[in-house]
Length: 79
Image (cartoon, rainbow, N blue to C red; front, side):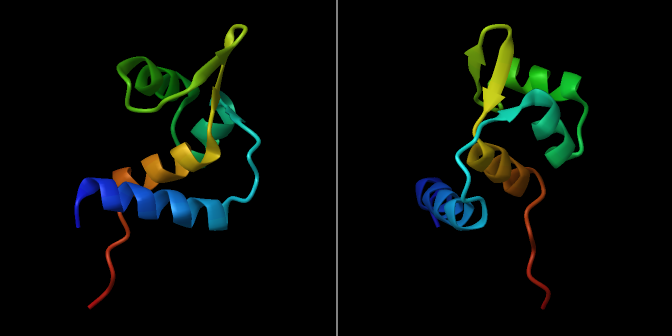
C-alpha cells in the first residue's frame, strides 16, 4: 500500500480508538509514547511530530501521537 493510503487508514483507526479531540500536553504525549518530555520536544523541533504552540506550551493531536506510535513500533501480525 502507498504511504498516503496507510496514513489515511491510520487516521480512521485513530478516530475510532481515540474519540476525544482534546489535545495532549508534551508530558501526556511523552507518557503515552513512553518517552521523556525532552525527547518529545526534540521530535517536535525536528518535525517528526507536529504540534501547535499555545503560549509557551506545545499541544499535540492525540491521533497524531497514536499514528507516530504505530509508525515507530508497527504491529506485526503473527503467522
